[in-house]
Structure formats: structure tokens, C-alpha cells
Length: 327
Image: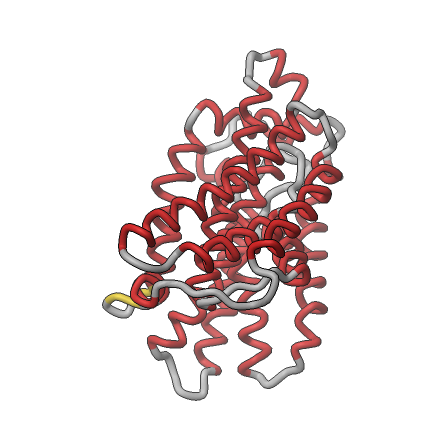
């Protein structure tokens, strides 16, 4: 019996829809607990922090969809942060060239990962763990001590608000509409899902497996570069921090799972990961406004991640043939 379109949509988007509902409730509670009410600066701060993690989670989503994982995502963000703190200043032309260099550094890092996985035939978890150390080393060369500078007008323009709407949130929407949606509908985008679902079958069906995997890691590098640029505009400085790189990587994986993307590959998408990222950020904000100890945040994140992983694994437990999940 063929499922109706609404039922099919609900079946394939249960976790993202649930993540969206959880975020709405949590963020509404956060705004309600604000001692000074809803103000523009509160919304802008929450948006900037949420969009930063959302870009990192979106970057992680692409390799995960292929059935892999990228443990260098946080290191690429830190690398882009250090590059931006060095180059995104001066005249408008210099700022523009600096932005191109920052995004280019993310692309190059993603290309290195992609070539290691595709050409080198290395396990993603192993090679990206190795390249994360390499990227961190380059970050240390660029920024041996915390510091740097960024154009104030440029930073204010992209981290402020226009008519009460946070600019960072608008930019995130543009990334989804102008980058993710067309890519998702392209042959390469569909190939990423096919590779994650069943790589051997995808190859036998004529899918360009090599191109799909390479595109996933290069795209991840580009999105991580965007996150690094935003981090620089928010902080207006940079630091080659291994701790920050590790935290960003772990949070990106957590956001991906919470948003409904399967770690088995082939199921999910960037929209769910973005919602998962905003949920993680809102947990920290709720703990802050309730004056709770920040030491509780890892516990809540762990519980939510465990619940999301368990809920997402239920379809796998109910079927004998994994391919039935994609019907």
C-alpha cells in the first residue's frame, strides 16, 4: 500500500520536526525568563551564537550523510578564525580579499580531507583526526598568541540587526536557500544520499561515488570556513585553541544527531542539524538565565544526545533489511 504524501513526509522528517518543536518551546522559555524582557541585543546575541554552531553542524552534516564523519571540523573553524583575524581588515578591497582567503582556506582544508578519503582510501575518522592536528598546527603558526584584528564596520554589519532582525540569521537563511537547496537537488547532492544509503549499490547504479564524497568534504570545509569567519566577526580576535576546536567538533556531531541525521548515512539534512544546533545553544542560555551551574550543560547535552540517538535508531531495530528505511 502506497503512503500518502503527508504520511511519507512525517515518516522521513519525524526527528527534525520534533527538534523544531523542542527548540520553539525552549527558546520561548528562555525569552520568558529574561529579566529585562525581549530586547534586540538579546535576540542578536542568541542568533549570533546559534548561527555559529549551526554552520559548524551544517558542515558536519555533509560527511555524515555519506556514512563518514569529519573530526577536523572544529580545527578548520579555528584555522579560518586565525586567517580572518590576520586578513579581514583595512580597505573594503582588502576586507573582500580577506573574506575570499578565509573561505578559500576552508575549501582547501576540505579538499585535503576529501582527497585523503577518496584518493588515499583512508577511513574518514582516522584521516580527519590526523588532518585536524595538521590544521591546528597551521593555526598556531598564524596566531601563536591570542589577538588579531577585524574591520569594525564589517563586523558590526554582519553581527548586528536590521529592523530588529539579526543579520546573521538572514545570512544563514541565504546559505540554506542559495547553497543547500540547489545542491540538495543536484546530481551530486542526490549522489551523497545514495552513497550514504548503500555505496556499492550507488556505484552499480552509475552514481559518481568519488565526486559525491569529495563534494561532501569540500562543502564541509566551505561551511566551516564561514563559521570561522563569523567567529572572528563576533569575537573580533582569534586564538589557536585546541580545546575550542574539540568542543566545536563534538557539538557539531551532537547537533547533527539531534537534528535527525543518521550516523549510518543517507538520512537527514542540514535543516535538522541547524535546529539541533539551536537547541544545544539554547540549553546554555537557559542555564545562564536560571543561574544554574555551567557544569550542568554537558549533562543535559549528553541526555538529549542519548535520547536523540536512541529515538533515531528505533527504525533500524524494527526492520530486517536496512534498505526498507529509505522506501
